[in-house]
Length: 359
Ligand SMILES: [Fe+2]
Image (cartoon, rainbow, N blue to C red):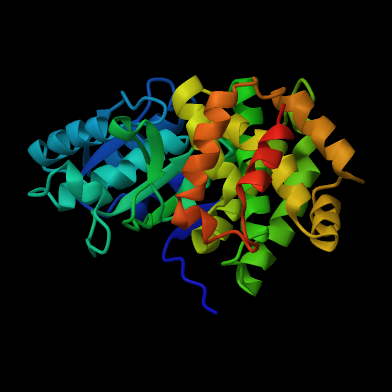
């Protein structure tokens, strides 16, 4: 058993500015990778202020789309090489933060083509990465994973390369103006990370510890998701839970709900957390009764019925699409990396049952 997480995580108010002397001196010229609206919450100005204070130069790419593609990453890589970036800062949700890791990898491997992104067994260095999350779901600031869209295969998939951020700067204040449905969807993603990490063949005492504590943290703020307002403290709590869940999956990876979700995100454009949420009741119901009871207790629900109703209220039912369900089920049955994480033998019938519980 081991625990390895080389990311220095600061989780507190104004940490971007407070610790600028450390993270902003990772290099002389930073490439900031963000989305069109991801950084309109003060995060971008906090980052650029800190860089200026340290005398570091920077340039901004703010066109990261949701579910970034290989093509986009290669375009930003070319920009980064041309501009001689020597570190990369991701600001936003999972899309910009994952893109930042992939771009940092490919700038360091500037002679390699796009094929390298999914080449297995290659150990490769990346430029240092700093991540500033502005949603409460992905946990990407505390994981080595980067998930990109592969249009050729009509799917999303994690890179085989591990790119741990050098710094994660976690400040809940950036969540205050997050649109309500993004807050909900990303918090459901966090719950998926906890449940899929807890019920996972790769789980250890370390990852269980993170999940058991983290599910309690998530539960303490879950009513914010059904309410109309939020306080800075509640935002801190949701973002803290997201980072803890990231730390947990950094050791175990995710499992069936994430694997199934990618098909619905690609083919129907369902937001990531919402698509993961469809399959959580089914995945939890497949666990043994003791584990199920324990998880339900940790996240604050008396039984499966309450849990399913809560989720249903937040994200609604999955739209029926038998053809897509069949494609997802067949895809998972051929996906060794997801099957490896399930602590029991998976059959097609089980996967159909998990999907049926989503309607
Ligand atoms: Fe996720």
